[in-house]
Length: 144
Image 1 (cartoon, rainbow, N blue to C red):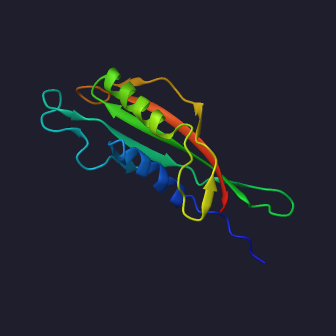
Image 2 (spheres, helix red, strand yellow):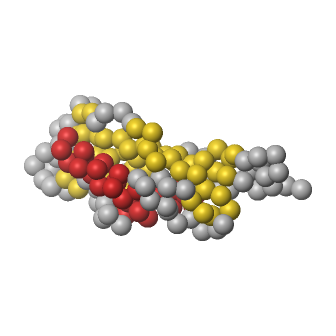
């Protein structure tokens, strides 16, 4: 008998949906269309955005049901034209996700937690520089 491992993609879709509802432009491992500078860099409006980098999840369980749970995590990189814009966007994402039970089809989820994350930083590899903050999240799910 084959025991299926819960797919990570629906978990990622739930995270992306919550960020989009903020509202904030969000992409899955790519910059979303319409994000960033809206004209000439440095002299136009900058639309903040998030990029979700999902993990495949880690199955967990017990002797009777060794794959009962999926421990899901992802890194959410948040971009802004200033440190304040990036930090504010990260705050909005934490508010939307941390402590919430996300809706994943066919699964029951535990509350989203954050293990922390690195500090915001300035990316000087582009001109003008942009800022990035990182929100790391994790949560567990099990079959509904």
